Image 1 (tube, rainbow, N blue to C red):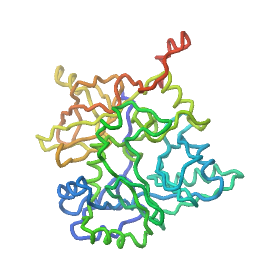
Image 2: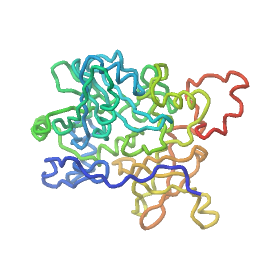
Image 3: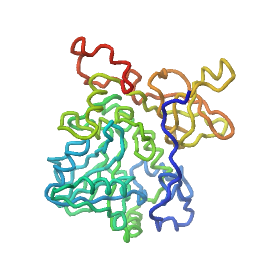
Image 4: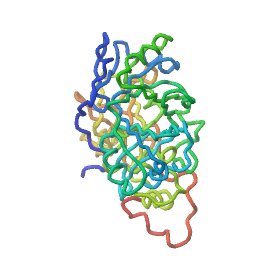
Length: 392
């Protein structure tokens, strides 16, 4: 039987090719990062510079949507998962567009500059089209401005100040007001030390914006570095950890992208039901991959039960799928994967790779019990027998 796991995404066609790919030593990224550089010749040194807090990352493959009009925040609040009505200027958050069944369809980094709300997304074209269909008679205008604006990443833990470019500061892993967590407390989370923000610059001035940072001593680094740091921080992304079945609970995304106490929105019933009475059917894990054989899996690789493999000699049962693979300069080869909730957290797993099988130890991101830290207590017999629900 095939496990209920993410499916590999088809190869991405870059919407824009970054001019920084013309730099000497640049190696182009593939998949979701297509259009920018994977590295510029020395990925280990690049990652060290990023973790020291002094580097700039080309993120111009991301899309940008700009929403204007006096109703923009209340409207976005009503159709997405986050509390946005009273979002103050230059305050960053993130939100999800969910299907009626509560599955993640779009993810957007959100910041308002007082005149417009900016949404940075890996699916900007599709997100803008969906938002445009939802305007009805409200005073809002939606524009996909990806052709005009590009993002650059910085290891800086600060919001943009007045007079500075539009800046989105990643809230991960802080549990925002109205959110909850399945994983460790904010200050004990592996992502607590990861500073990250995206700064929007005119696309025509991308190279100049990067050169200005290089002039201050920051090297330009590729997505090899930023992805390794993201995996270490257990930070989910739409183009990697999300498939058509994903609900936010599986990725511990109720920390930053969902407000549990706001009004109704599409998909809210699933959010509330799983949080209050159920358990997410899958869970995110970080894998420490055995790199001794010099064989590494790719995103989309099948994760199997190693115990079955060792005892029978046959391929173990399929329990999940790798979503992101990275080489970390200190941790070695690591990955994020989505596995069945029933997989014990203390067992080794086997990951399929070209040329063999790679063993992997787990690091728990979402615990197998599937219960958040503030789940309401059961309220009598009405909660009995719910374990058989497909989302519980």
